[in-house]
Every structure is written in structure tokens, then in C-alpha cells.
Amino acid sequence: MPGELRTCVRFDIGALLRHLRAIASERFGRLNSADVVLDGLGYRVVKIKIGGESLDEDLRRIEAVIAVVGSGERVAVDVNGRFDLQTAIRYARALAPYNLFWLEEVGDPLDYGLQAELANHYDRPMATGENLFSMQDARNLVRYAGMRRDRDWLQFDCALS
Image (tube, rainbow, N blue to C red):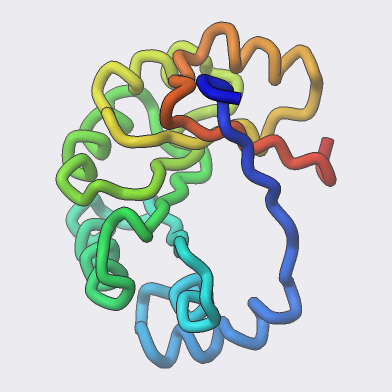
């Protein structure tokens, strides 16, 4: 239905990822992501974790992945809820030119204010919700987190809820 928030379903491909992690580390060094190797298996978008290194290091890693997959629109980044608002805005400004597929789980999953304010500073798609475990939390995310129907993704993880 037009205008509806999009959702994605996450599933565990653990055995394959464990097998490919060694290949990814060998091929891409400190990228440390089996997701890049999965691109060769026909996946349309790859995802890497950011926020554990400096912004400059994260940008270098993103550029390395884009060099492999061809476009920032094929790269998603996941922060794992590490950032406060100021750090999130700083990263959002730095990431904007890459036209990433999405910027995921930037702050604390229950900090709807951070998510809403970040939407004022980052025009590309954002994804969040995988660490919400109740219908009430999900409803509040939709109501108060500034999720934009035309581009953002809700990532409820039904297996964990």
C-alpha cells in the first residue's frame, strides 16, 4: 500500500556466515564482514558495522566496500545503538555523500527523540526497531521517532520478540 512504512525480516544464516567470515577477513582485512562476500552470492545490499573505530576509519571501510559493490546505494551501515545525538549527527553529515542504502540502529532503541532529531539531519533511509520487544515499544517508535514513510525501515525481529 502506498505510503506504508516498509519492514524487513531478518533471518539467521549463521553457518554460512561462520564459513564465510574467514574468507572475508582474508580478502578484505579489517573490514571483518562476511556480508561483503555474500554480495558475490547474489545479495543486492551488504551491511557493515560502524562506530567501533574512529569516523575516519569507518569512512575508509565504507569506501572500501563501495569499491567492491559499486555504489553506496548497495551498502547499509549498522551502528548497534552506540551513538549519542551529537555523534549521530556528526556521522550523518559525514555519511550523507555516500548515498547509503540505510543507516541502522544509531542510538539507544528507546531514544525516540534521538531518532526523530536525526531525521532532521539525514535525508537518506534509516532503519531501526530490531531491539524493541513489545507492541507498545513498536507503536511508540512509529508515533514518536520521526520515521519517514517514504524511505525508513522498521526492523522488528519477531524471533527475539
